Image (cartoon, rainbow, N blue to C red; front, side, top):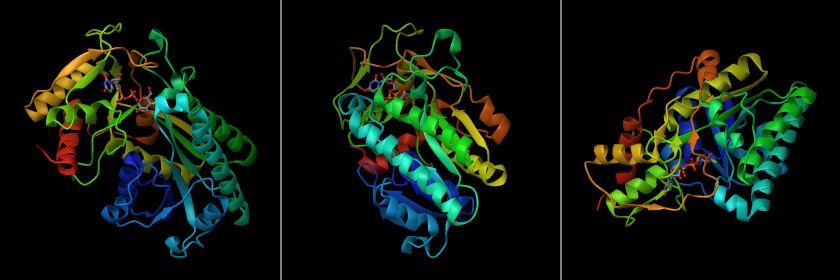
Length: 343
Ligand code: UFG
């Protein structure tokens, strides 16, 4: 069975491609390679089509199996990771985010409906990458965050994802489009095999920046605020191992293929770690120190985002394997040394 993975050359998408392959699926990746890496095609031995999700003619070719990358096999479902995900950039250039994340997703949804009709059936199912950023800054009494927590995104990135969630609701009601929405908390870590991991340019995420400061690729790490209402004053996040995220996609896809419907799940560990906790774990794992200094708060950072992922555990029998921060850091460290060297 062939699955189309948009954004499969990116961080989370590439780990999901491997999970699909290990689960017995054939995979075709569609990625515009703006932030993704072409080398993943070789690492994963997967056909990679460079293109835009908003290119309807290309989508039709891929979904129907007419595209050479599909080897004659029509696509049975889509995992949709492709998106821009820099919160700050989304504030300075919202049009880019709405065009890419929202506009292109609309084209994809319409193509799924059309391809289903062409086959005389329902739209093809979709697994959609959403984010905890759709919750904005949740009230204290809403933490840990459940799926029914009010969604009030505070930046265009979060709003673009939230809007696609709304589209999926409407397309489900009107056309019967089956979907699973996953709201990721902080994706982190790397495949323990050491050949896949986080490689953003520019890098904005805490764990790779901490490892950069440890290896000397950067002089220091800025801690964005230590006066938050948290025990050590730094922001708390729910860091979820990317392998556990990938595994959830396999389970969500199987559920959709078996029973259809519309589903939404948080993916997190239920445990929060502060910026200071991450720094301490990185020091313990690497047995090295780093230079830090406290900087201004970063605009739009909520003090605390922690999920309850009980729904995914209950309905998908999802059991995160790497729930401990230390394991996330260990795998990130192996990847980081392999990718960037260890001065
Ligand atoms: N942080 C620092 N210094 C840095 C980088 C980050 O102190 O150099 C802090 C941030 O302020 C935050 C925490 O580390 O408190 C985590 O920051 P990341 O940038 O790694 O992750 P975010 O929580 O900001 O972002 C994640 C996802 C986004 C999503 C967002 C929702 O990566 O896609 O959660 O809030 F939009």
